[in-house]
Picture 1 (spheres, rainbow, N blue to C red):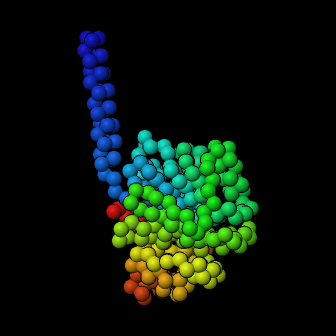
Picture 2 (picture 1 turned 90 degrees about the horizontal axis):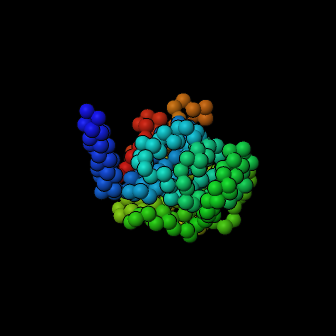
Length: 274
Ligand SMILES: [Zn+2]
């Protein structure tokens, strides 16, 4: 009887191992480029994934929510995130990154190097330091490769506004291109800085626009939109948030141009696979 139990135990273990291996092989074979606008409530978080390589742009306001979301897309055996980008030091963008730094091995971190005075940002920088993560200064001209995709940093340039009371002003703006598809990630980039980004002569055109600042009326000017000319616009926003985001005038502006508007508070996670 005892030896039969051992045999069953062994067979059971073998079955579990084969299922795990099958899962891993299936995942690795299904190496599509995936871009997911995570539903993190009132904040921003975008996961870009190809096979076992990940780039995370912002992490929403809460670590718990962010880790739950990542768990849906990053397989459990992959505990490494290749690059984390913090567009700017606000809680609704970096709050969740604290949990990410604690729970994943992050190879490199990128931020705009502007000063932030929030506790969340102090915490965040301290963790990067403690964990000896390579910290990069995100600046126009940088390019990051992820398989066939290229992520180009378009903003800021060398000169920062660097005002802890106006952290949005130096928001990283980045454009990812893969074949016919392009995504413009804007953080909370405000209209006030339009002239600076236009003067830089960067090509803002993209098929999909992550609408800046959760659809705030202080972002996404008509001229900005004229330069991006997106087919689709994603608004990352929490339901019934206290800021009144997104502004009706921004949503109208998008819709009257025939741009398909998608909101995380209405659709949950918004995923693209190529
Ligand atoms: Zn924000």
